[in-house]
Length: 367
Image (cartoon, rainbow, N blue to C red; front, side):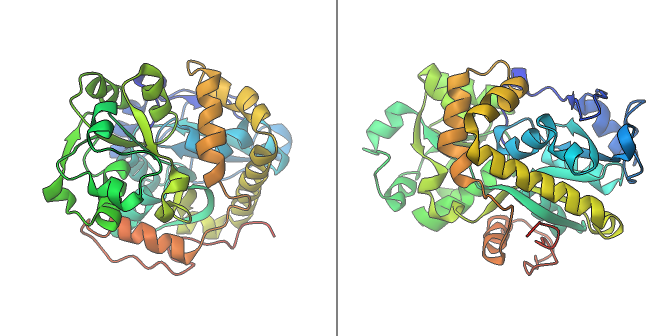
């Protein structure tokens, strides 16, 4: 997943419905996970079990996310507006900065549930992890943004046929935060699917370490194009260094490709089906609320989470990018997970079984 600028990437522990608060920097979590355990700060739930929490017998559930990003709006909405508490859960959310790190923490059994990328989950499963998704927060939502001079050089507009746009990527300099991450794998998939290009041979991929590094590279005209979740492209547009070339709603492959999902280990879900149902119900309620009340979500959810991001940028990200890709029922399909398997196909590892019950299930969703 792609996050916001460097100033909003700090790993934080967000306040749960109980009002409890504990903080961990992501580096601390990495070192603890490497040792095989994750001991959250005193007063927070320890993972791997869902006993009664403090207020009124609520079940304690620890959740971990990889980055702070608007694609997790349903999770943040359920937390901020009390939907988890309504469904009997006392949820504590910890945010890291890395999909690889979240895999290590989840495999340690020290936290209960992950809100992360379907591609991150699939990569872990290819390497032998036993993870299963129980709800979708949204289909693929990254935007393609590019340097204005490069767009003009290739005579591209937002109405240019998608095959022509990705065909123009021959020789392009593609900026990513890290090689092998979700944006890198997605762009490779798009270039192969629509541009009929070999990404390893036909374009240059440049790892820049962070969204701030990507922004600097655009300012210095050192890269031509990037693929990023909102509001990163919106911020680049505001800085005058990039233009949005394609929104996710303009990319057919993104329409049913699960991107932000809720998942856990199969053993945890099997041992805690009541938690899985309550958590999934909370996410669905948040999905429906966001569709019906976007202005309230911007004011009472996104602004508190992203206090340094202008409200106009958050509004554009939610209304123009996130909501069109956000399901109202949290449901997933085999066709969508087949696309995830195609995205991660070039990565070595076990073949992926995309039938329901393997990587994903709709069993715990309401209705």
